Image (cartoon, rainbow over all chains, first blue to last red; front, side, top):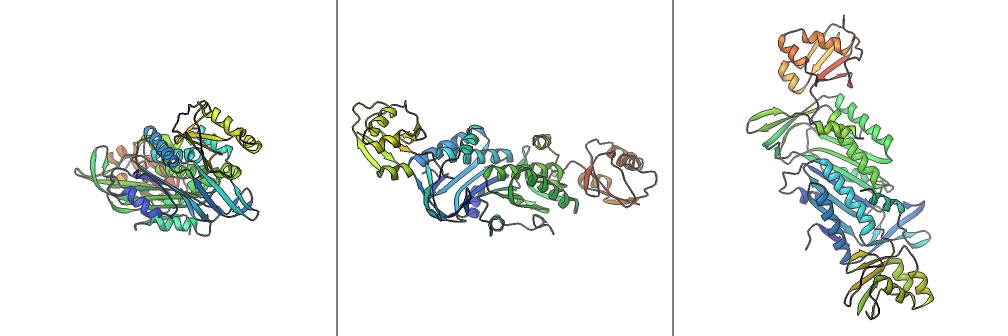
Length: 150
Length: 150
Length: 82
Length: 82
């Protein structure tokens, strides 16, 4: 089992995840975390929650591949990626990326790289619950552009 | 008192700080944190701890100025910067920067910007305790170069 | 046989999450897509969507990618996680 | 009068964290530095260090910056926090 990737319905604890990244790890002085949460609006529509679908098996393979590329490009220590699936409400955590490194720029760059590629390559799909009912989110062209910048 | 900046001898809780950044804040979907800790080595020398000196008054002013510039350059929500002073041991947290934003790139960029300028403008000085006794850390030319890249 | 899976909006619009199809006469993803499109007018419309993505055995691929018996092929809209 | 403060390695090498000096004949940071350097050979060596940074009233400034009576001027080595 890949300890670096977890796809789960349950919530996660930022503190616990960072504690694991830092445990017995006195060489890495820098820890960068990204946490993504359900916002209360999207394109001006009021959102009450999300349902997250994914493609089991491909999700893990795709994230492992993104992490491998990040490790080859930057000098990073430990990595953890968590993505939640199922029903989520406003304010709930959706995704966590944590990266440690000796020098801070590596952790910043690798973390943002992982998020940018997760956004365009990892098979997750969001369905929003709004006042107008449920609807699948459209992918954003800006996300493709960001990934292509690396 | 500026709620965004805290210079303190006491340790801090990453979870508590992130909870404050997210509290009653359903508009920002992204939270990026940086945590810097005391590493066990520097230039190959084994380090047992640090003493952090600062310039009270100027420290706060300098950090407030850096945060203002970050807010003018990126569309960010909340910011928190914590820097510890006094005696610190291996593995202890030294510095925390937390930034929230609607779109993740703003939080990533602003967070790294704040760290890069804190490194070259905020009046903190580290004295290391090594096997060879105590010695003041030298500033790194790479830190100047990083700040100039923005 | 080829296992074909569908996700998200596509799965709902097809009202189908998975099917199996003979691997005869299918050597690429594009050929599989053609064959699925021929099932009905609705399927044709949905598979004519150029933004549709495809994966073979959990790797994202394009239409020229070869398909062999026993492969798992997936079709889905652009991803929106994170 | 001008309040002058020193930090970190410079403070230790001077064995002084703070002094006050008359603002007469001092109109810039560079002039203040000159006057401090004239106190002894050791002070001269330390203030000749071009990497030394200076701040007036908590803002980082260069040698051309004006100084007025009542200002707080600081000298210190390049910072190493974070």
